[in-house]
Length: 396
Image (cartoon, rainbow, N blue to C red; front, side):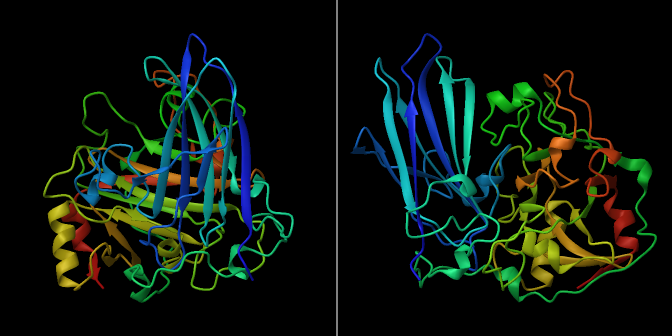
């Protein structure tokens, strides 16, 4: 069957003393199988005239000279693709239409950022895939109970696309009552505050004014992460139900706890020491679960991670796997900027939705997430030393 087509019409306001530009950002997350295949841009028209959406990530433009720069600072999810374009406002309202076939991906969003003259983001509006108007012959494939995008023929045919290599790694479960983590070395995580949610290109801002799509470590003005005294980190997370979590996605769309979730190791700046992988996605997370559906992600110095990659003979963009104290998990490089957990379309009824955490007005007033706020799905991050880690290490 032919893939359904969506068409979102939006009326842009006239220019004002504070806003003269709208940036349109289209996000794709979790393309199935061909995780690094470039998906086509939707069609954008402004008052009936076509305007090309530009590929922002992954892209070799003035913003990026190397793929791994996608992990710089706030960066991008490694398994995402971003298209964007600016529309300049005038003294007349403008009608824009964004249209295209749905893709076999976990998540699609269209976000409009209204920019002030000093280039600080003002208001923003996010249109999620499950609310996009669909052609009359089909139902929206991201609504519960409808045929999903996997009930239709893919609109993208790319014989040269590279399939993500982590699918070839063996999966196993780990079980332990005492996982050996030193809970005294806990590192705090934060939900974005109102100022950060409105002045950075985040998305899906909740009614309380804070984005519900992220948890991050504290981003300090000094440039040093708050955990800089540790050269090794362990993240522990109970994994929610997600849309694309194995090689047989649902053909009927279900009521998932969180459509997509990823763990990201972000860096201060790109250099020759940077790795070509920095994201763990739902398929990774499902491979190594304990009896409580908890998974573990390790963060280590880049030189050490590079040794693991070489020793395990891994293909490019493939994180290594180790077993530590009976726990098996993936290893990412050291997050010299921060650890970012991305949630996409978290279910309003899910107890692990970041919206359950308080929304604070600014970075100065923001307080860390407490475990009980999202329990038992609250992510926990701990610091340690690589030397201690090696004492209980078994390399896969």
